[in-house]
Image (cartoon, rainbow, N blue to C red; front, side):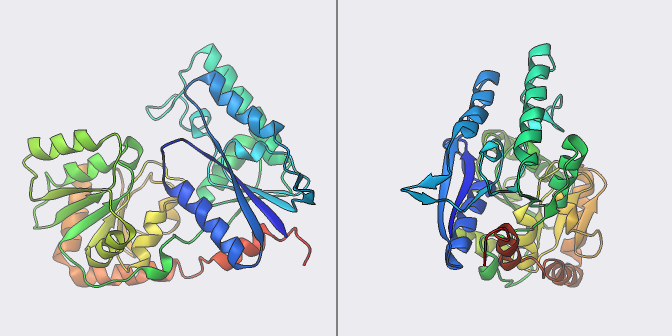
Length: 348
């Protein structure tokens, strides 16, 4: 059976969505499918370019290739699911949130003028059409499904994807530092983590892996706050280093603003480490339970985070017990279920 994965990519950007696309291709191939990944650049530098990106997908023809039928297309994120195909399945990573829950917030792209409102309404109409015509509709988290039902009136089933390094995660010890891995931008709220170390009372430290637009600001904040030796920016690290930090850290900080899913949560639990997060962190909360397998602070407040860091540092046995409970929370997440569901419309 011939399967096309349809996705988008912002040029020179690489993150969780791109990793998931690659892993989906690998897992389909491992199960004997003839699979190819169709990726088009996504340009949202202007309202005009944003809508043009959707039109390109709508005009694309993936019915056949080299004279043979394409049996299934799996579309993932806006606007790839505008593709037309007799057997289209959507596994939604996220919509264009700037036209939904982020519209009018500090994280949004569009202003609230008349032109922007027209673009928002057009995107809503595009989504209703493109998603509504899918043979089956899935999301990567209940949080994404909830947004879809709230804003578009569409129901979807959740299929949780395992993280890329699931089979390689390990726990060596519970060290003296809280670890963060991810893009250094506002929505990840890594600045909150750094500021938390201005209020810690124990010997706990912080290690931050990743790059992004906040890097220079965080470097200055660490110096200006006298946190050298307390908080370290590691920059980009490879998979081996990532696995090593998960294995040796005390706990993992992952408190983004209303995250779609959050691979970091599952990576932390796979390494038997508790997660420190916030009550508005979205998909993270589908796995993290306060006091059971991590700490859920009522707000992304540095003082509250500092208290959580100190408590875990001062009670390593509790940190270990939480990490073990975290491993139990993700026991049912598997690629077998994901692939079985996404390909269910194909003949046996």
